[in-house]
Length: 154
Image 1 (cartoon, rainbow, N blue to C red):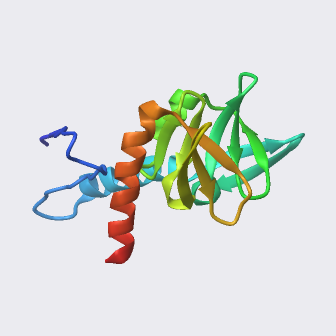
Image 2 (cartoon, one colour):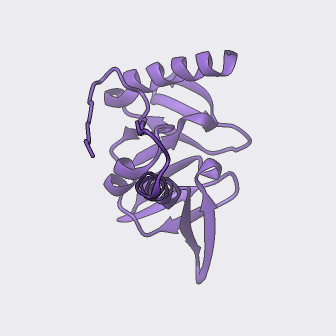
């Protein structure tokens, strides 16, 4: 079996391609392993007090640090999670983007991005919640928002 890795800043999304003569046990084992990896970060455990909730990633607006804790914000609540921001950044799917030292947001849930005197502000769909985007991350966010609009138009 040959394993090949291609890296380029042109790639916006991770893609795994398996070339094989037939679907045998080894190919099925590889597929199963890839599905496990993909599902690993489909849901996260979030805590409100002593209660544990299973949070679907698609329902999370953004992750934010506050007092050395990381919170996953949904439209209705902020759940404590037991991951560091850098761990999330490494493992979250491509629709999540770091936008400041203390936050990662779900690009698919953005309603608007506006500039104000105090900074660049992101507002989310179906929520009053909003976060600021650091100038350092603004260019990448704008590029990703442009790509998102092209995907939705097709």
